[in-house]
Length: 259
Image (tube, rainbow, N blue to C red; front, side, top):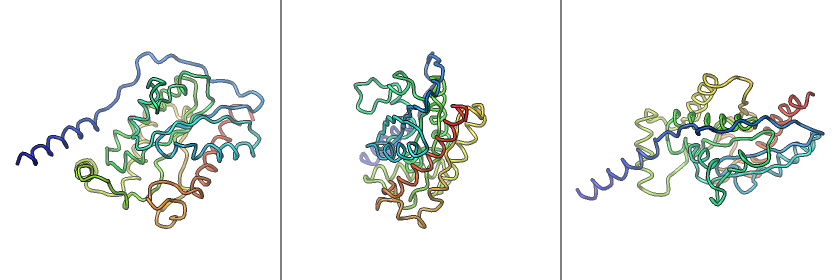
């Protein structure tokens, strides 16, 4: 009984912590967007493990170079991070190994690509929680003159995703039952929640959502795009996503540069 009660208390504490909602930062100074001069641009990529280890940087840079842009890319990826932690990383001290503070407060960036949601959905943290924190990320970038492009929650093998520890499995199952009616594939739910939240909160021309469908619409029919863990992209998948990101950035930058 003591062990059972201890596990219940621990699960309750983890539940309460994971469902806390961050508030917008106080008095984040406004900064004007940098001009696009001579097709020289600075791009940031922030997110979870999909953005870590320069997995996309070189592919995106080459795609934009082929389209005539001189690009400098800076990436910050936090493996295992949910959208709330990615947001907090933007304000973390630079001594923090996952800090992305320089994106907001360093030399100006023209645009930032946001990759978040795989860990939110895999952990069944709630579509409202995910959409709330991605919106905070978008708002923070916008206030600092950085145009946000959000990759919609990617398709991945959510049905095959497993937690490595028993406590995690219990918590995920409880979260799934309470917030998702025990539905396993919640990717469409999370995508819809984000689109609705952004549409209701921000001007339509202040952000863009990068459609993931040109990369993959169904995990089981596109397994060659993924690693065996069913969660991360293979090199082929990273090239496909980078091409989609490059296309979206090219369209934005051309508009910013006046053609």
